[in-house]
Length: 320
Image 1 (cartoon, helix red, strand yellow):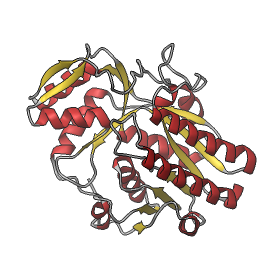
Image 2: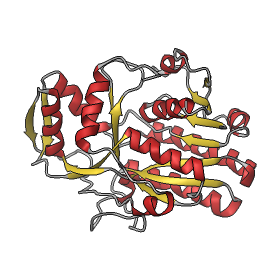
Image 3: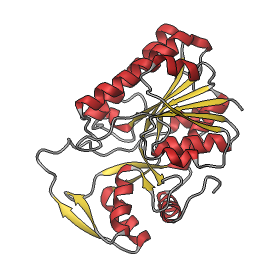
Image 4: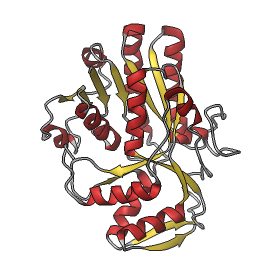
């Protein structure tokens, strides 16, 4: 096995990626700021092939030091702290852009001899699609700031591939969910985490309008399986893949989570006039990933939600 670098390796997805590849025998370097609240979750692990680096990912010299020896890089930093998951505060967007620029600069220096970079995009890049399911050739027409930023990230990476020969794969990821690594009572994954948190406390789950909006949800283990396919055979270099799961309406998701928890209630609300734009129904096609990599999502929503509940309620060890 080789060396994996996870930039932003202490978030929900980053922790799972670090754990997964370490348990597969890879040497893992997680680059993150020491102020991260999840730093101890890696430092306390019994796995001795994970190293946490306290660093600013905008520092090109630091990135070069670790990336030049890497076989694979997962850039998983994302701005946080906006009014919603669809919004980005201006100062956080500037910081995220500086991280992207430092990474691209470092990858260009290393060229075709550098690591394979697997970029994490979003289904929000498609905006409000006109037809379903959505394949990778669907026009990118984002309607929110987060989708615009992810389009910018993808364009930077793709430009470096075409002009400088760097090695890269891009994923447009649906809503990822699962348990949080290394702590009790932890749920990760946007609306799924929010619904679990409220239902497990027997609080109402807010449903905007009728809750008929369809979303596509991918269990974290399925996403890790896709990453493993990309890294192991490298057939996806230069490709873009939808990382999708299984569709369900928001109301049906809330009802499934309440049934799993045995608690909670629905509370219907009107969409706020000043809120983020509605992104429409979304179902992502995974045909390209199956054709090129032989990958399909395997975990049904019923199984994934149950596993999330079971693992999120208990202390999750790094060897579970």
